[in-house]
Image (cartoon, rainbow, N blue to C red; front, side, top):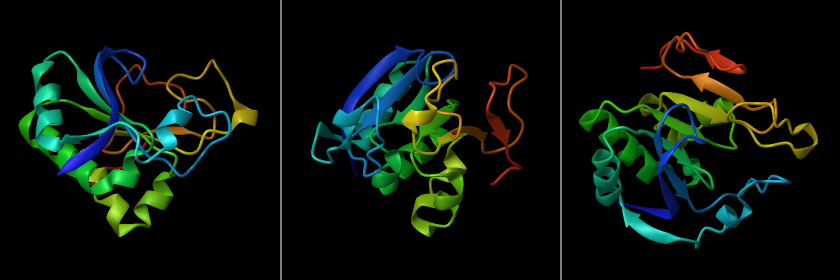
Length: 168
């Protein structure tokens, strides 16, 4: 199984707390006005990378957790679900995922919701340029939520965080 990847950043601290390996995927239909990564909208951008190769790269960095961003990983949900499942089965890494879909939109889709059990945190919602707030951590506008999908967030909770009862 393959993922269309624009870039892989190692030990980034901009894509979630702590060091992270960030997988930036190609393809997004949300086309949010003011998007910080409009080059990611094109579905044919970047290159195909095997899930197995991505997993090896993620495992090689023992210090970093994982971030899925883009583009929007939910437009490649089958491959990202496979990658997330393998990460959870073979490592102790947390996974943060950014998407323009809301949690409710994802939950309403049998196909998209297949990835949720493997994600630790979902940053959801489209970026709204008119509400842009540079003081927010890990999101661009206040409608976007940082959702801990499987229980209580850490003590140093980030403003804008929502905790859900475990989905597993």
